[in-house]
Length: 502
Image (cartoon, rainbow, N blue to C red; front, side):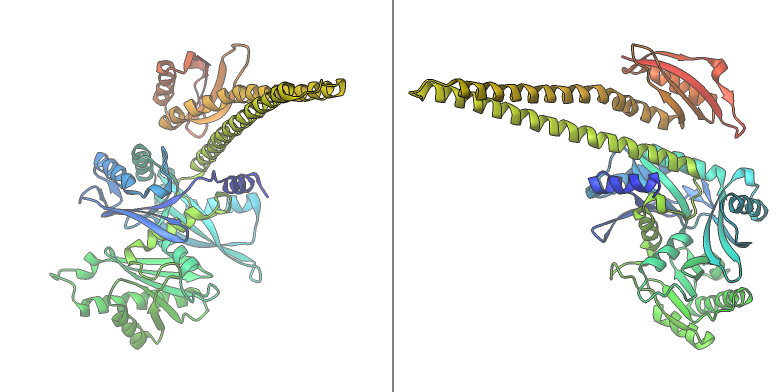
């Protein structure tokens, strides 16, 4: 068991584990969902037109305001703190997916082979894109594996992350709505058999989406918007919609048969309406069984919540076990791990304070009780206290003194550990604000300054971080040497800064 799993299980046992919800962002809506006691809790907000269009943020400030408003709508039992942790699913926003095969390889050789293939299949200039991947199938008989890769424009993802952070969200991962929907079907669909291939036909307010699932994993996605189905017509009639289903489903089935040999016998329909009509069309034209997608955890559950529910399921997965595609990369995971450690330290700081307070009160009551008991016995007793009784009383007083010494030692231990936690508490928001990742923090005793080394993506953020330290009420003697700011091979800047605590 690795360190991440140990930390996750320990935090869960102590009740200090950080909650993570699902956040869906599309051109028209913001949705947040999380599980509490097996039930899905939700909050939603309709976006005004023109904020996000065709995978671009057109009005950044309005998006930030909308995210803040959504954050205020999240139920209190989620336990909102300074930042709301979220798995982000992007629906109707361009994330490209591609599946490719590799021979069975492991460890570093696998990572190198995947990175090489990602560069070859990327629809963008790889330097301007974020890419992620996950293993979806492994066939030991044929000695090959299949990899699902995903790509998104770097500029959009960076801008979206900044907007979320400014609005009080902490995004841990970003994925496509298709991956979120596939996870929901895999984990919560009634009568779902992962060993069989399934075709998902999804109808929502954005259009019609077809997903191919093999071994419970997404292998193919095809989407047609309502605008493309409508064409030049004034509205979409049932015959036009039926023709679009037959035409697109025929293309998807032909694609499936050209790539895999297993028979495709089942279609799951995810829609709020026309489920029976769509099922009848599929059965009559393709001789394939078609039925409504039903979920185990909630009977009355509308279609528009499927993707965000899928990302909420991922949020409930321990971070060490989450191997799905993440277009935010490892930096966010490292930042989250640091936040977990800080939450753990704060939890124990409160626990120690409470325990010590209870012990001190108990000791005080015991001491007063024993003193009063001794005085009462001495005043009311007609007998003279013997030497043996006096020795017993002296021994009891010695035990009380020893216990008081132990309490004092624990109090001194608490006071000596608290400043370290306080320094991290004061530093953490300034680091997050300026996008700084710590490489090393060395706190010296004897009045010597603490030394912090880290890196970020611009010199302005380094200077902003220095000024924030200097202007605050907690730090003094802040010293940043410009020669210590150096460019790294990955394009980021490293620096060293020293300071004292007041």
